[in-house]
Amino acid sequence: VQLQASGGGLVEAGGSLRVSCAASGGTFNSYGMGWFRQAPGKEREFAAAIEWSGIRVYYAGSVKGRFTISRDNAKNTVYLQMNSLKPEDTAVYYCAAGPASYRWLLDPRREVSYDYWGQGTQVTVSS
Image 1 (spheres, rainbow, N blue to C red):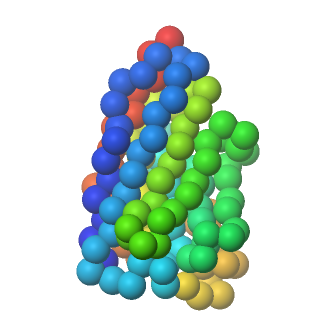
Image 2 (cartoon, helix red, strand yellow):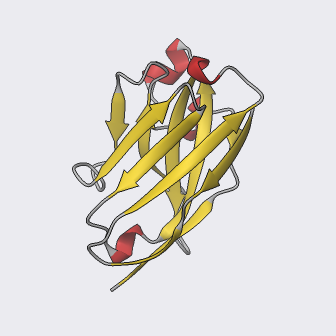
Image 3 (spheres, rainbow, N blue to C red):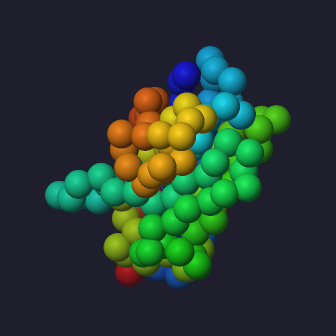
């Protein structure tokens, strides 16, 4: 599975941005998808995840209520809509895919639940 993230950019605090991740080379609706982010000088952290049918979603506390993850299985694409952005949201955003399994459902917030990673897209929020 190959993942291509796009849509990052520079936005002012309080603004919105949507990043996308297009998948190829696999059966998209058999993967749980996640978004992780890595800020400068910090470890990569979980942001959001969505189960293969799109019914179950998961969010980190820091983004809950501001970010929305969704997927379009017909387009093999997962999205992360980011609203009310803050300077602390500045990071490289990575999408990841993990096979539909009990392992993924057990903890979609952990990196070990994912087998495939995209290259990342930079999101910068200015104050």
